[in-house]
Length: 435
Length: 191
Image (cartoon, rainbow over all chains, first blue to last red):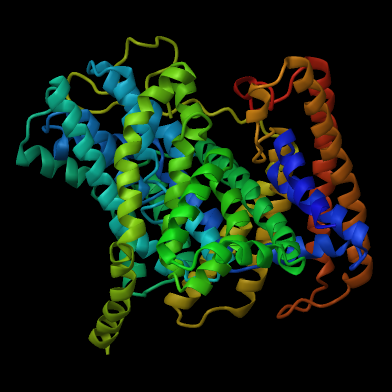
């Protein structure tokens, strides 16, 4: 009976039926055959799955990210990144990473980052004589930062599905994001010395100050968001709304980089992404519910616990599973499937769910680049007009810093949990200050 | 955004000789959007105004308007289901297409046609199921506002109906052109 649910879902999904539809159609088939509940309950469950206030963070983080992704703001941020790190050996490689880190503080997805910023980063590096494989590799690697550094769409979905505070998850991503950035910059430096790359700018305080002032208001978006959440001034949902309003005022009135036609296009993009993401969340709420009531999740948990009770062994196995799932499935879809199965096991083993959330999202991000099937890999192969095989070879070395970051984050939970733990104390301090 | 002004690729440098970035915005094409997308756009911006009003009342007036939270949730549901039609028309619903890289073209055609059939079948049935749902519990009241919950289900019904219509249209198009976005992601339905 449960075979209808599981096999049905897998077959439909692999055949190319949209993931959300595969979940709903399999669930519908199960409900109709088992006859436990009337079949319109499926629709009611879908409604219930997205009837939630925290989910409002989804459209508004997407909107804020899209609003900030205009040419005017991109130029300002890259000029600043160039003044900041362009004078290092392998200059534009570092600029690529720092630029992506700043943008990661405004947007919450990886694929959009790879497609939008990636085109620009690769073109600029090509103009300055960097080999295409190096440019593609560093662009792919830095695209993974998008959802790790808050705000992050995958964290919103994970937090909702696993019942974990989204604010805590966001804060958990800050230090790992910086660690990843540093590991990648170390890799750039290694390449630069090995291949003898030059510098792309000369350092000057005046250039840094000038470009910094120019980009200041745009870079305040991540500062407002992070500061507001660290000190408990607002929730992630409110942060998303405030960031959107801020980005709108900045683009329409201050920088004047937006016009009404662009705003319409940005809104359409936002609607499209929101609809596809939330459709999956709606579908997962019926599918996940059936996985639980049919005791599939219990069976998986019992099976895993029959051969290991050690958290680190479980984390190792979970990492492997998530890496594999991550290269087949889009992150949000993967999260909605993995959470009902893996989170109960974490609870039994006493693994912190905020920590696990970060590890899961990081795995799924690496999965996006993972040869031979990662999504970012294909996006970049298309934008850089490089064959899939050559793109795979270009990205392969960049898995080293990413895996290093994954191992560090998996086995040193303090790196992930330090900021969320201390934010409570900081919130209190702010509270006392205003008293 | 594009790395260089359209047309003369390779002549314009993103990072100019002056040591500054010169990224240009891509030309906006709004003709790719259909009439229902503009309705969704209106709903989306009503949602944006409502949530902004909520944050404003909470922080500036220190008295959050209670009705805004509920209305915002319902508008988000409406945006999801109405916006779903855009995703169906442009084939941007998240799907897995890697199997298509490993099977012969003819087999891919058969499988992609099966996918179209499943989509049409499901959306059609979903319209009927949502109709049943409205019939059974559509008259219940919303929590804070004195309106029937059936209005929200109604938005879902319209969304499913639009998705049904668009999936039929897209299936015809796939049939005529001989491939779908699954088989050729680079020449998919996204214009």
